[in-house]
Amino acid sequence: MNRPSGRAPDALRSVILEPNVARHAEGSCRIRMGNTEVLCTASVESRVPPFLRGTGQGWVTAEYGMLPRATHTRSDREAARGKQSGRTQEIQRLIGRSLRAVTDLKAMGEMSITVDCDVLTADGGTRCASITGGWVALHLAFRHCMKMNVIGTVPLRDQVAAVSCGIWQGTPVLDLDYDEDSKAQTDANFVLTGKGGMVEVQGTAEGEPFSEAELLALLKLARQGTNELFKRQRAAVGIG
Image (cartoon, rainbow, N blue to C red; front, side, top):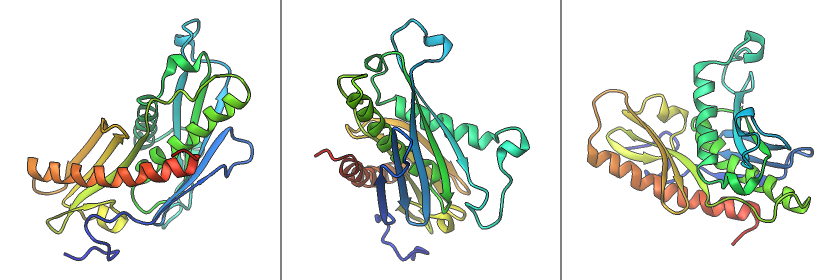
């Protein structure tokens, strides 16, 4: 079994998490996973959606988009088309759910943070990179709020990161790039927490159904991959 990238089955692509790259955002991170690159910015507002007014609870949400030349050919801006695609809506809801899963919304007080994830270059795994980089941007935004005496502590209960896995030429592999993702027999995304919890698992057989044993093999690879991503996240925000 030879992967197009030459990586071992259990090897991540090169990972770079660069914090504080956006001058005006309260929190930001540019994440590179191989050739995939996403800019994540976290913006703080001193208000909440109408359904949370008066509850004392905060809100974390996300928006996701791809720049026109993030891929090999230019795609129209969704704003120019007048609506988001179903794929975009699905991905940004996933990012929001993932970040809220590890956030103490009560401890935020009545404020909102929107994490914008803009794909600069796409080579597979953009939703996973958005979640991983989004957590860093969110953490830094909370730290900014502490400096401004808006909150007393960072209201994050845990880390969250995501990675893709799949079955390529009959072998479970970690962190699919586009060449693998487009031809894999099975493609799965795992959103996991630092304490070992699972926020979401998305798995699809592109041909033959995959077995329970193969699913567990993919989960094992995902845990290995996210453990490395958790280390990179901690380094990016400066915690041990």
